[in-house]
Image (cartoon, rainbow, N blue to C red; front, side):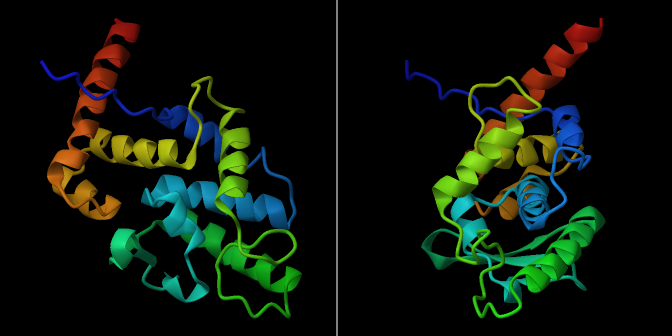
Length: 192
């Protein structure tokens, strides 16, 4: 028999709520940027490369959507909620104040005004997730898994989650249905 794929790691919703209450972030450009990056990963399920590739023009605060360029340059529209709108608004204001001369169109910049690199974002995510969870794997992709798991736990259709994640095939998204059923069983057993 074929060996089954291991289930993806994900952060529990209460752990993410604890992180995103805002108290763990410094009141600075880096703090606002890091908070907004973590919230973007968790609220939209986008990939690391997609986040780094976001341009200011990809953000529509009125429609509350992002234009995300995924694998093979395929674009998709990803909606976001009020909390992320507020965070993006605050971040864009402090970004403009910190780098008034910057002509770069990238949405997220380093503290020196340059495009962010994948390893920098990975390390930042790992550090912040380490404050709220003990799981070994703490990466942007874990936040993608956490987004999908939370969506399904709250009743989202698997087809909708597939579209939001930008998956080609429904079978790629179906792994999250196993997570949610295992998660529901463990939660049930922990309170009964």
